[in-house]
Amino acid sequence: MDSIASLFKGDQLIPTLIVAFASFLAGILVEMAAVKLMSGRKATPGQKRVSSRLRPDPDRARPDKRHPAPADGSVEIYVGNLSYDMPEDALRKEFEAFGKVNSARIITNKFNNRSKGFGFVQMPVRAEAEAAVKAIDGKEMFGRCIKCNEARNLV
Figure 1 (tube, one colour):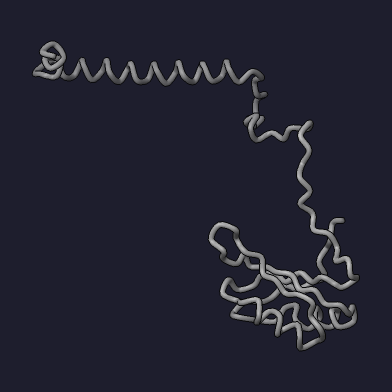
Figure 2 (spheres, rainbow, N blue to C red):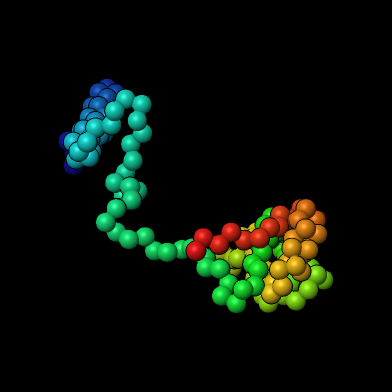
């Protein structure tokens, strides 16, 4: 213990710090070289490296996250740029002024249950749905200008 303490006394302090810093830098360089050797393929100049964890695996099937079209033939309407404070009841009432509404839902974050700022409304009659989209698109609700159009179902 006395030999280590003597390194930090008097004129030995500066050389001790220099050796410690040089050892630290050498460790970083060795670790960088090891990572480069273990990564396998080299990136060509100007090419960004992509971690193999982030690269999609072609053998693994992707889960189907597409939203199917309503089975009952109703029209689904996408409503975007909603205020984060807007309740589903207010969204439903806005569309009920144009006809019957099957459902109105605002998409929320699954972790904190806050609105993501968009939602979907289902209306059974196409003429009423088109009238609602035409009237509500661009309208200001809860301080935000609403974006409204027929949902693009991917299935």
